[in-house]
Image (cartoon, rainbow, N blue to C red):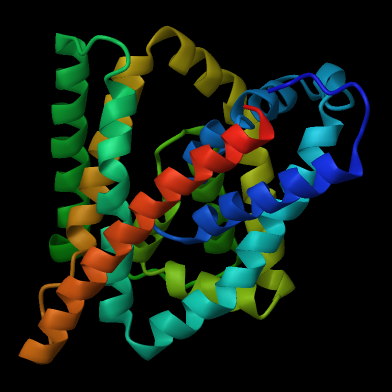
Length: 282
């Protein structure tokens, strides 16, 4: 990112607008807020600041402030729509979300291959997919665990969300859908309930602060292996949430269309966001 020595109101609103996409990515399954941070050029200053806030917060405040405000605005603006969509037809909504996830995988695969794919990369992909998919399928079909949304689980939502911010490519929402926490969380956020918002915020902040330095070093030293691990987790968390029991043939057709539409939206975002960043001078 360009080193802007003088704060600009115009720059503030440009970053704010771009950050709204990151907030939207935070609530849409499959659209990783961390990836959008990378695309817009915000990831490095964000992680640098969180890894060393004492020395980096003030110099990067012209980025961090509009980034935080814009992300929150995008997140809150879309929450009501997503909540209504899930309530109207959770099956079709989930199909859209699965499409969003599928639409991001080609870009994730391309990014993971920027450095040479080694045996370790392939091993990481296969082992992560098998282990996590086995775990999630067991939890879905073989476990009697029932999760009741409460402050502790909303805090865990924040933790999962925080991980998706510092780990580019990892979407938190598919995991939350699987756990049955996504819809109650989105409902609470759209209603601005403090018993939902506060534990989520605390979870996000603590997770980002604690993990940012570790993730930064991991990606710098083992980018290919780390990226393939993320792809494996994305695949493993997506497969169990794919709907397969439809009320009618018509709903099945609509489900396919929703899935295709979700993939198309993800592809459009992957095209639009780099252009916005390029227009700003990234």
